[in-house]
Amino acid sequence: MGAPQGGVDCREGWRELEAARWAPARDAFEVSLAEQETPDAQDGLGLALWFLGDIEEGIAIRERAFEKYVRCERCSEAARVAVWISHQYLLSGRASAARGWLSRAERAVEGLGCEGQGWVAVELGRHTGNLHERTEHARRAMDIARECGAADLEVFALSLLGRLEVAAGRLEEGMRLLEEAMAAAAAGRVRNVHTLAEAYCNLIEAATSAGEWERAAEWCAVVDEFAREHDTMPLLGSCRTIHADVLLARGRWSEAEHALESALDTHARYVPAMGAPTAATMAELRVRQGRLAEAERLLSGREEHPSSWRALALLRIADGQPKMATALLEQGLAAAEGNAVRATQLLAPLVDARLACGDTTGAQAAAEQLAGHARDSAIHLVEARADLAAAHVAMAVGRPDDAAAAARRALAAFSRLAMPLDTGEARLALARALVASAPALARDEARTAQAAFRELGAARAMDAAAAVLRELGESTGARGRSHGELTAREQEVLGLVGHGMSNARIAQTLFISEKTAGHHVSHILSKLGVSNRAEAAAHAVRAESVRSE
Image 1 (cartoon, rainbow, N blue to C red):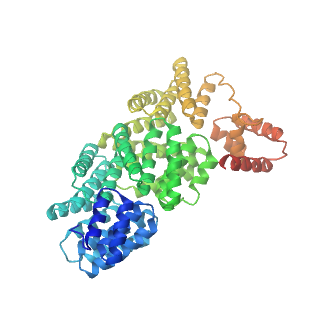
Image 2: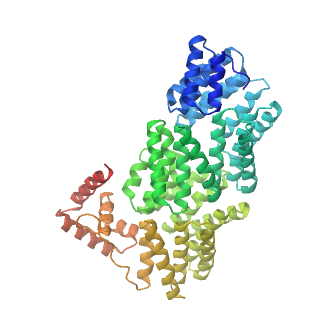
Image 3: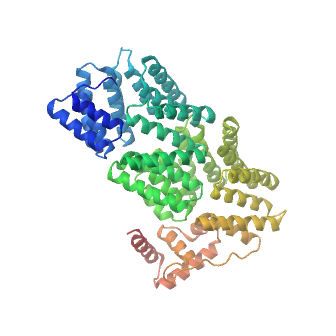
């Protein structure tokens, strides 16, 4: 962007924006606009309001700035603003409006060779689903930025390209580009703080998706400090969700839950439509905790959002509907064309869903596809997921020795990555593989896994470990009581009754026999003093409402 037009106050407003002082920037722009309505002052005011959390008004004012930029024939500024508006609508789930504004940006620079073409290329790179096309658009934007000497555009394009390279499985190349973008930003080449925010988010999203936890945690701390210091509400909500992914992977579930609750509250107050990824992450946590009804509520109304498909699939696997889970995961894979990292996040549960359906051939195909991504990317997290999937398939087809070898590799990899839940799941896969050949060792591995799951509060994984220990002839002991007369296990069963599950479905979900599930239901009816499942379900709903208040 060239020197802003509109007098001393307008220039002061932009200086305040560059320093991330939103309220003084807003005040300066309002004074400038009272004297003369210039597009630069409107542009700046809209951005200041957005960072202050006045999202709708910020977008509306920048829409007016676009119209003025067009009338002044300032194509680059018009395209940049239209692209920003387009992306805001895309984030809020208004895809038609987003496409309309992207078309307006393209029309503003049609037939012209200017910086605006680069901004259009950036947004085209975020709209298309094909990873190869997105990468080409990002490269074109970077080339234009360097030709025009547009530092903000160059940093923006560099960070987007880096994130896309990581998504394609090219970790080192991608992280090099992302860190180059951050170095350029830190050196003062970025004037627009929104560009800096995008570069931050691209870096931590890429690092998190690839399991680069130390790198992700380092930059999450930087972003969180920046967002808090400057009271940057939209950035705070998005980045706390990504930070929660890191905390979940590292086993810090209570901290992750706090971060997600804060992010959900921020999104609800400012941009509700941006909350879908946060709700999906919280839903995955609830599934791991065995709180399926809560997961269902979090995902209600978000079933069509791509960020929800994996969480919904994990929920469907948990509540005994693996065919539905398979369909959701296959839908997600079709949309993840070329995105190797996203594909691995979906292929791992797809193996389990297909095995639950009895489709060992399909599960083996998914595991082989996952192994291919591991070979191509050399990302340690992908390799670990591939080995664990291979262990599950080998066990399902009666090859316990192969299952044990794959589980040991997964166990070593997840341990190095410091991911306690996944380490425990790999250890449990090893225990299953050793049941026949080395029962004492299998028992030790299952006990260790169960202890790790208990420390995390991973209820479903605890049940799976208990099932292996029962198979080995070991009593797993009764769970402690929670509130009222019901034991913790009975509370869990009551929640599933409230979810409308039959005894058979409850047994499948909790890894117990149908007879045991029936005994639990009978005890619950007796303790609650109700005569049927419907009354018990109503009690469960009331209890859940009290807990959520």
